[in-house]
Length: 145
Image (tube, rainbow, N blue to C red; front, side, top):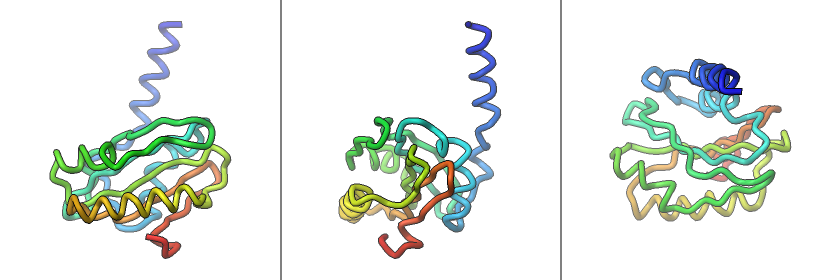
């Protein structure tokens, strides 16, 4: 069992892209990075990509791991690392275990709440991308953000 766990940890580390070379110019770039990481997970996971002024990924933070169809997200956790790292902006990312990346009413509501908080903190939210095993949706591309 320990050997199997070691192999699984090694596989996960090797499957994660190196953040120093990742640039998010459009929602497709975000999806390409995150679908392999969280698109097929059985629980909803909410992550935040911290970006520098050139849209390079500085850090990828897991803010919340939830249940089959929800994750608890609080602005304090979303913006904490962004403030510490003095990022230029962030991209919100979470998965839909159902396979349908269509934004729910709760997704839209939390995005709007986080947009209000971002104004107070002075940190730009570039996008909120929802990924799944069947693709992705960008709230910026949909005109919601």
